[in-house]
Length: 188
Image 1 (cartoon, rainbow, N blue to C red):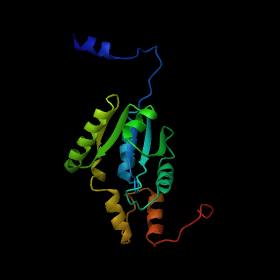
Image 2: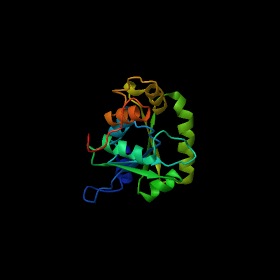
Image 3: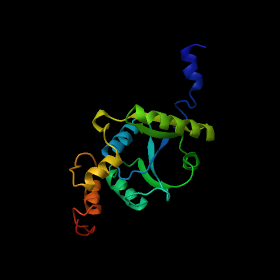
Image 4: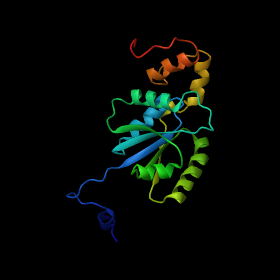
């Protein structure tokens, strides 16, 4: 089979058929969301029509922010993107993806050290549901050193995290660690 016929035969829809929406789930704890996360989402939108940012609600894991607080910070940070939805889920990721009619899981990787763990997760997810693919995007060089854990540690000691997280996250971290008084939405 020539490469021309291969691509023609594997194309599921012709130009007259309705377009299938490519939806990806971008899962994580997002405790808190960083600009590295936002970079993956923005670049993921060049591949997918829609991204559902899915916050895993894991009662066994101690988080600085509640799932609701993380959802609010993500929604504010992503308000300019009409094709991004933020949700909270529990249970198996592939079950959630299937329920939301997503055909892919989007994952970001910062370094080689992330690869083994991410590879194991992708293989297990594929074993559980072969219809859902995992797509990896390398973190932009600007964000390669950034992680939620490092951001929280710097913020806890009053470090300047501006430019590494959305403004709402910087404010919320200052409030959590006592460097700023909480403001009601009416005062903002």
